[in-house]
Image 1 (cartoon, rainbow, N blue to C red):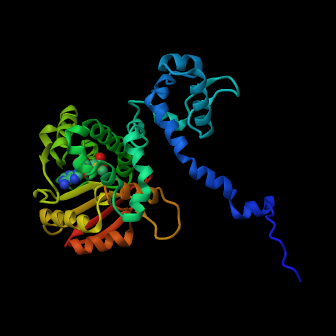
Image 2: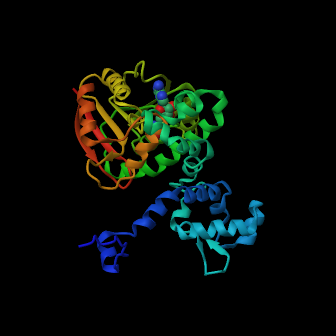
Image 3: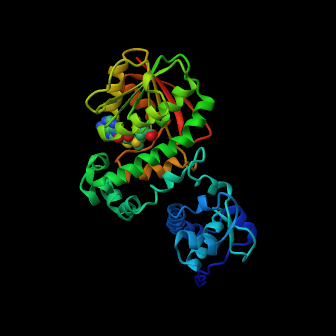
Length: 357
Ligand SMILES: C[S@@+](CC[C@H](N)C(=O)[O-])C[C@H]1O[C@@H](n2cnc3c(N)ncnc32)[C@H](O)[C@@H]1O
């Protein structure tokens, strides 16, 4: 009997339903993700959302206000409407409006992600993704390959001041997504002094201090960052109960707090460096101090989690990693902490709570 020729038979609708999305479309979507990313970035850079804040506008007017090419702008907004970001009011009307996701591109809106969108697909950052192969081959951050230095040294270099400003604003913007969700589910009461180690421009700490008027705060970060934190703390009139300290968490962490909070810090580092930071926190806290991490806790199975993509960002940018609950538990034990609990909430980050032993 002769071998049957291999004929690719397209799946029936029923088979497709059973096997999920069309695999070729799924690949195309994955390969072209950066087209959407670039279009969202460009729309954000042009301030399109703010121009639509008072209601729908014709693309001709948007093009005039943004000094862009009308037809090119139309094509970009039409594509973004396809992705659910902005909407064409009626097919072919060339009249565009905000959608619920686009509302979070408005500047000044509570929970606005505008500054985050101005960082993530920004050319400086985006360019590093073209070098992912380097990181996958070596396990090292592409940023060091491209710019010749680790990312937090780069941000401290006055040559990269602009990039540092964009990065810090993005961190604050992301905190605005995470912190309200954390405050909804996690009770910080009973903490006399809360120290935010590597607290950036202070969004996390100042938000907690505003909700807990009896609490005192201490923020630690590198010198070029603490200036921004001092400014925010002063603007919010919290200077009398919030101290700002310049310091390097690899050298030491200041004493005098009942609890330490760190958002998106441990994930920036490999196990060896993460352990060094945690051990310095343990020294600073003494026994029975609380350690509160705000981090993505990824699942061990194949379940989708945005943290599994952020993990690649950690590989390429600072050289860190996202971790599972058992990986956090192990790190804590080695550093002299016992994990208490993981508290999920509406944001992509969980509260990971531990107590020093
Ligand atoms: C990913 S950002 C997070 C900032 C802040 N926790 C937030 O979520 O907005 C990492 C922070 O670590 C700080 N950092 C990096 N290396 C440091 C070091 N050796 N000592 C203290 N802070 C450091 C950076 O300046 C930056 O503010």
